[in-house]
Image (cartoon, rainbow, N blue to C red; front, side):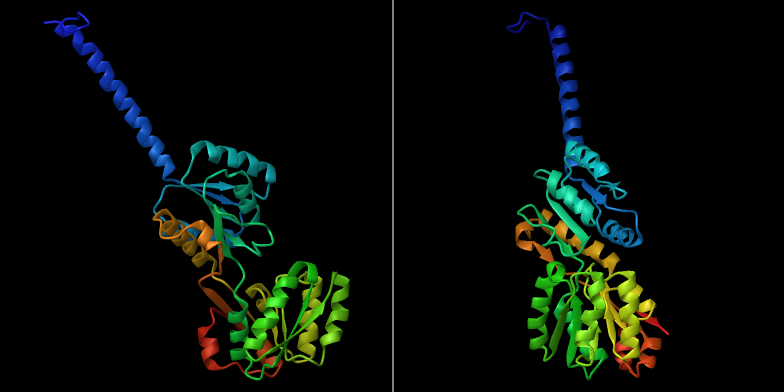
Length: 318
């Protein structure tokens, strides 16, 4: 019996075998493509411990296929990496650190981007309908509330800042302080050389000195000057990181880097399941923060922190 092509029954099987093999091949390619589409490309700005902790937290929480890229601080490497990532079409790009976040935003095309370990992301332009992330800044209200617990007599908080760098943050801090029954006394300094004069303008008028993440003010030289000046005047010095607490500042509140990574995974998961959209998320604060306190410094300035504060601290330097 012949079909319309005039081929015998035996010959009819050859196109069938070819068609089946071709279909299986297409199916294999499709499945591989789908597997790639469900993957997550993780870009790390540098190979430094805080970024590694955040990456470890992300990997431990996410069960997706993850491909890691390390930019080693190089923009050129970043441009090459983003091209390779675009070619694989991952479901998400996760950026750890400022450089990675900028590279992902500028070159990631329409691939959703989630970033973390980035200070002041709004100022760096990390906004848009296809990008969201976790800020490194601990909410000001959280900081001031904790500092009031550490120093029960706290009334006036002094801060030295560069208006160009952290002016918006200081304006917000003034509003928050007032809500908590505090006064914020802010002294501008547009250069590192201006820090001593700014300090003298608030000396004798404050109950504690607050450090903000401002790279005009936070330099090794300025920290050494302010730390010694606060110590000599028996003033609590509230820093931005436990690194400063270890070498003499009284206390700090900083993000738990490993938990920031886990929080990043949760954000990716909720967007993938359509429970959230990146546009709705924008930028959120870290969910978990760590308190560090230096009891040796507290003793030298005549302060006795409440026992519950010491118990709550993640790091206690004695």
